[in-house]
Image 1 (spheres, rainbow, N blue to C red):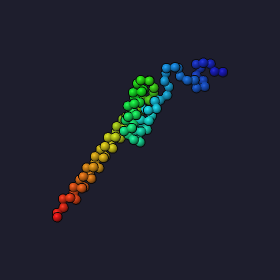
Image 2: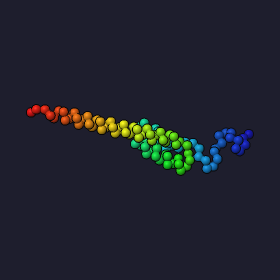
Image 3: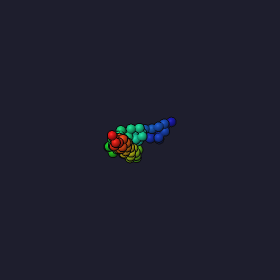
Length: 98
């Protein structure tokens, strides 16, 4: 037999105490690898929700933000490098003698 508050059979937490991890924090970390700009948005939303509700997942949201910003910066640097390479390659061929 289970008595109230004995913790058996998966008793839910006390009222007002959030249990579990914030879903947006998990999604922020996942989207850091899939589509980093979405990970940035979700990470900021998760941190705001966590500070308001007290849920768990602050570290997940923080790492989601760090990785999302890192991957976005690498993507921007790669795109700028690619554009510079294309521009440089295009200017090399147009300098020939006619």
